[in-house]
Image (cartoon, rainbow, N blue to C red; front, side, top):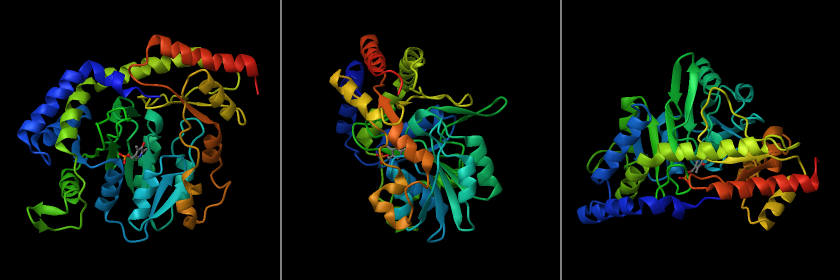
Length: 375
Ligand SMILES: *Cc1c(COP(=O)(O)O)cnc(C)c1O
């Protein structure tokens, strides 16, 4: 699915030099590279404050902590996302409230969000799934109308942009009160281990988040808040500084792979290529197609036999995960999310996928449909 070795090969010397420097300076926690990386990423995101932290799940937890919601407050999350979005809510003693997603973009359905709002709702977490922005205009409007905080889980869409209005382009993760991201190695901007960050446009919130991520410390050994130990390692920051310089080119390469797949797979009778929201750019963390119900697993098996890997992101909707049975949701309650779990399939996409590899993927999918016809 992802070839990190191929992606690292051309920048091996740069990574090596960055790591050697950290080794020599020996400031492994909060070393200079952390602050430098935060500044550079903030510039890339259009002058946002960036607060590095330990991983993307911690980033979500810290974002929620910074909102200071009352115990038991409800936080609306998509029923179709990686579990971390929901987990961060639950671990804080807040109540995750699922809302269904849109069948085309796979992101929160604003109408479903509105229907889920109660007097106890404190926040909405929008997930920019697979590399494309959720409906930020509708979600931000709703957050304002109901006085809710909007958190953007931007682990999969770093660098994506969204047209908020005529001539007004926003960067994913910087629209809501707080944005979060992950530098898990397989993300579009990945470290050589765990890492994460928060984004905000509010300087006071940035300062608070920085404290929360470092034991609630306002100065050394003085703890004003109950915080976390969640910091980005200096080594990871040094690696990320190198990789950030390549991110625009890598994003473009992913978009070119997607364009190639789009052209080659668009005509297949029952296969839905990724639907692009005209207001959003798409950074293609995943290239996720929808397959006719009942055919998905057969397609995946066929591809595997042809040597083409594929992955189901995600096989189980969040409300049906065993850990969240206590919320009392029933099968059928979020029909779009449940249908997506039965029909989505993500094809190989990464910046170093060669033309031949792309052709092999395309030919394997096409040959499945020639053999199996329309469902
Ligand atoms: C990867 C991911 C996370 C969690 O990030 P970690 O760094 O693995 O903790 C959260 N949300 C989404 C949507 C993700 O894809």
